[in-house]
Length: 105
Image (cartoon, rainbow, N blue to C red):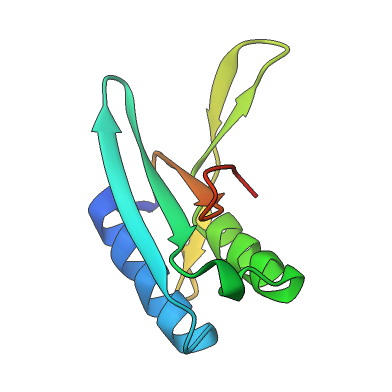
């Protein structure tokens, strides 16, 4: 069985990776808990930082920690393993990257 990582700890890992891999780019990383789940939203704080390269890099980082997927055809969720520091782990959260203009990237 893989180690479970809580949403709060996933947010910390995302902040760590953003700081290391995108120095100088400011993000807001917020988590939400709700009935039957949780999610993390990464938002660019400065619209000028939203270059195509930065958007792609932010999406790459968020995809690393995407512990859940949703299929609209079957209206079902699936849990997917994530790799954290070389170890396969599980997490039950969605991770979104938002634009500072309020839409998802």
